[in-house]
Image (cartoon, rainbow, N blue to C red; front, side, top):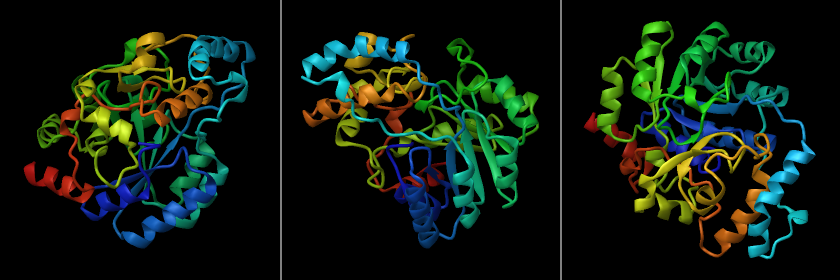
Amino acid sequence: MAGVQDSALAIAVSNAGGLGSLPCAMLTPEKLRAELTLIKSQTGNPFNVNFFCHRQPQANIEREQKWLNILEPYFEEFALSSAELTKGAGREPFNEETAEILAEFKPSIVSFHFGLPSSSLLSRVREWDTTILASATTIEEAEWLEAHGADAVIAQGIEAGGHRGMFLSDDLSTQIERFALVTRLIEQIKLPIIAAGGISTAKDVADAISMGASAVQLGTAYLLCPETKTSQIHRAALKSEAAKETVLTNIFSGRPARGIVNRLIREIGPVNADTPEFPLAAAAVTSLRKKAEAMGSGDFSPLWCGQNAGGCREIPAAELTKLLAAEL
């Protein structure tokens, strides 16, 4: 949910009895401290903080130039110069500075995407008696997480919106549906399993629990809530027929992520082998995105969305959380 929510959604969900989550990968240290302070001041209930664990890529001038060459026709269309790129939003992996800030707040739950941080950093987190969650998209990843210190595994089915949590392989053919993933993980690892991907209704929740999942994780279902920062262009896409067609694409960031099909995906994607490594691909596309969005178009925007957008409801997050529980 990085980029489409901040503390407001986390607070609303936690106060309503769910586990609100704050996406932290795109936050500066100052913003992270401010958001955590705000959450602590407005809820006494548990909440989660989520971080990325990717390796920072090395610049590859040849590959980045090839990417700019692919995008050049669009720069010309918008009268933009690729020499004056708008820097995309940074995505920082969990690091020592982040751990120092978290030590001030000692969150009860911390979750990770793209694996786990180093053993030394993970030990720091454990000092706060924190529960550690992490995403797995394959059995091998779940087994790795179990062996390296996770307390529970988020089983991210291929239906999930946003970035895949893949970290042992870049091969998209390894990605499977939530039902199969959850079923197999329950059989093969001892940790609690949190089902994720395509869950947006009470029936989806009930189905996952009946399979043996200990809990479920929802994201797309909350995208239309007023507490989110989902743009008007993104909201319009979620409420349109276009939301029925989502694909995995790497052209917005350099890593596979599920979103609504738009012009850029149709014309150069969904998966393009020439995209720079995550998150370097974002800089060039961000310039195009800003220009197009200023004209009311989402043709160059990452419209992240899971496969079951039909559960999105344009109601307050607390109401949605209680409604899902009541319906269940």
